Length: 315
Length: 315
Image 1 (tube, each protein chain N blue to C red):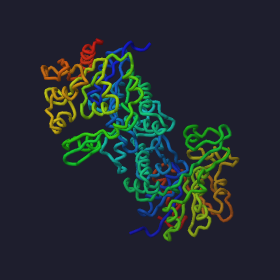
Image 2: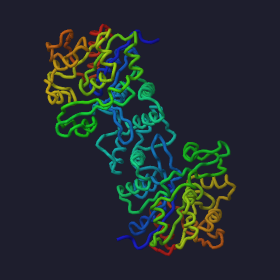
Image 3: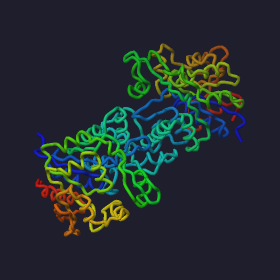
Image 4: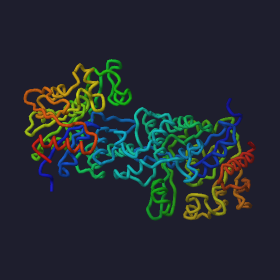
């Protein structure tokens, strides 16, 4: 029997996947679909790497590394050492187990399967109840205009240059021509859709590429179900990653109010950390303060329950 | 300064690589070129795997696994376990370190480098003094006609079916159109070439594909330097692999005499094991008995010295 209602959560990688895991754990099996950013995807060593999709797969399958905070647990690094010895590119770390995902995905893409079909196959094999939906099967590539080095592809900026160059602008190459993946269109049109959640991912690097795929921003703008967002900024700081630094570089005040303004017209309720209670939000947006720092699995499920209660679907 | 003379050794994988290592160790650095079979090459998981070239690279670099007898030492298997969990093909074992060779080779092939250029790059990176020369940069694919299952590609026969089906015939698809790799042509025409060695590889599966590349058999037939071969068969048994079984299936008596007859017109001196002293050889071929079972590195270098002395180039 299919779940009586469905929740659609937009997510990037690490930060967003924490809430996605919480939602996965508290919702009835199969009630959650996670709409994943593919703007970070790139071809490396001839292999299609889809970092946010992979983070979601590993996190929801319980394969993620809780110590390192990224990649797979019980990972080994024999491939990287051997690649380095052969003179191969070693700026992007690929663990031995992680590599299986990229090799198998690349093989299946070459056979003509779509990224969506492959992700669904991996989901089923890994025993994940929630759907993971790449935003598009067409290439969308986030590019970063930096003061020091001009336009950089995302991974060379993010991993290669460790986000050090100052960001002046962002571009999602290919987004205008990209088609929503069929499963995304179906999820947005699903009569059982009960709420949409924006996970605490980087609004500029992780959520905006999803919204840039034609039809997705419009679907949120004319929503008939509540949209609840969680701010990734706590007291002016990003929990992880370059969000706050990037906001300053873009001339924005790093804070929950800036996140709220960014989501104006798309979000009904913004969940901010208790440290940000009382933050100003645009007219028509409600704000709710709750503990949003997710250290433990209990933190993740607790925040998921807060979000679902605000969306009118207490779990 | 380049070495005063050069030795060219034809080799397949494991068995041949043992003598190649002995030759590499006793010859002046750079005096040895190993002409490698590429008939076992195949594309697996979208990656170009070149088993005999890789065995030679690992063996000459001291990276081979002396316990398992194949693959790399200190290998890990995280990739295979993760691939299996994703539902990928797991009949061909790829270690994590081994995978780096295939991924980097495939990347460089896609950039337009030849197999020869890539092998030379890997050789230099791994600090190997001897040249490793793929027989051709064009695809040659060994196929096996079996009684039970008809024509099989080599790796599905060799690894997938563990050589169980009975062999009726062999074919080296593409060989007639394949061009000798430029470095092979240069090695055969090199005025410094002093001897050619046929390593104790399977004559049918490892040496014949090399000889099937137009020009190579002819170069041996009209040789102006001694050709010394080492029999892979000892007292009717193969040291490793399916040579003896395959000889029986092909209607041949498994023995050094059959190897001698197979190499008639191409080889001046056949080295057989002491167990086979007195074996009949074709007219014009000399035979020399020596210990040919190579268990230790000393065994390998001792046999290399025997071969080089017979070739008139004692090391």
